[in-house]
Length: 234
Image (cartoon, rainbow, N blue to C red):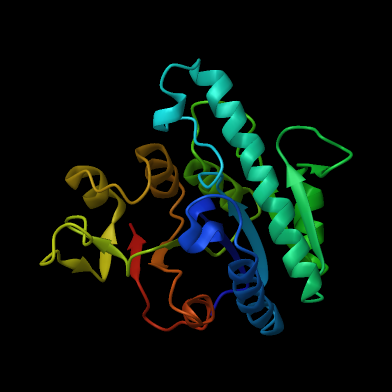
């Protein structure tokens, strides 16, 4: 269905039920799913969040300078990227971590052409440190990186089945959207992605699929073209 995809993982997805830090068993499960997708011949890039360690807009950062807090959050994403790289390489998947903040002893600096070359050689590329700038979320980083590497689709993994008109955890009769437009998300104020990320996808016509990461095999199903989650298009 797709030749090249960008998968957006939250930091919380790597923590599983622990809520904080990295769950090794969960990392292995995610890595196994990514291996199955790679075996289909699909090129995979990943943007990972850092909410399982630190988030610039979280409660514990309330009295901090926003720039400093966001920079701490960016470093948290690099920790997650390295953990995911280790798990993937244990599954014999060649992986490269590319950081928007230079840290040459730990990760490669992000260079667009080099990232595309890694993908063409069959390596999984994990983008860490967001965009390297404060005030931008990892959703925005995922949208921008997807367009830079010319991904066919942005896959956003969440803990719910897709996009709803209300929070399905709180509202039991929330209605799920099978298909929705970027403008409807912005007009209804749905909190699936921040407005900057949605606008970026809208302006460049990048399709987005929001799906439940906690159901085993969902990544493979989405890439294979099954109707999983919610599709966002123009």
